[in-house]
Amino acid sequence: MEAAGGLASPGRQTSSIIQMELPTLYAWRGQRLRALAAGKKAMAAYLLFAAGLVDWQRAWLEKEPLPPPDSPAPLAVDWQNRPLAPTSGMETGYWRAALDDLLASCADKLAANRAANLTKKIAAIDEAAVLALLAGDITLTGTDGAPFLWAALSLYWAQWARARPLAVRELVGAARDLCPLCGAAPVAAVVAAHPHDGLRYLRCSLCESDWRLVRAQCSACGQSGKLRYWSVDEEKGIHSESCGDCMSHLKILEQNNNPGLEPLADDLASLSLDAFMEEQGFARSGLNPFLFSEH
Ligand SMILES: [Zn+2]
Ligand SMILES: [Zn+2]
Image 1 (cartoon, protein in one colour):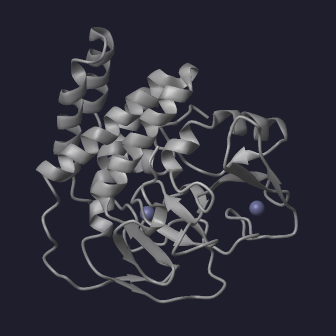
Image 2 (image 1 turned 135 degrees about the vertical axis):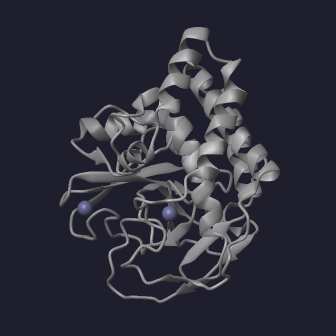
């Protein structure tokens, strides 16, 4: 597959935050999911389903972009207060309309009973269900409804995160386990290619921003004394960093060796590494929007 250019792709960057342009990101992700589906027959159907959701995000963004903000005042990022953290009283009109459009665009591709079930579930989604999902609780949305709702919410948050200039205040020693803009967990990490050669960034699962974290430090608890690195033969260019202090692991994609690797797509397609890490006693700290489970 032709490399999409990794984190060097068009977008904007501060010293420690990179935001790829969304059309570029969605095109790359859709292409990568299809390439992975072609090589991983057992997962192909689900990877293509995910590619369909990404295609919809790209189409909706082009058709109905979020209106510009009333005030162009910079968004203050200080690594402590997350300026775009979900709160009650949020504006629901945009993502609700997006979600309805997504469901309509998918309905004819789903089995009739699944479409009916999903439609009912999604119609009942309210602010409480959204806040619960964003906090990792899928009781109200279910494993089948969660990827649809997340796709609509992410499209909203990703535009919102890019709508105003960023005013980043660096704070040495601040926790970097969660996105400094929206507070969501990372999907995975990348070791970046040119022009950020060798630097590690974490990709936000909700607003699609990348934030820098030094290497050889646990992305979940910040400790560095009991880190180990693991890989499996099936997953080229991906390894996992485990931490014996908090017993978590997070995948790291070596974009410096293969700029075509895409965090969400390649995390989703490398479940054999997750299974292996689970056998070693480590729990995933990353959140993949297409991979919600009941526990
Ligand atoms: Zn974020
Ligand atoms: Zn840790």
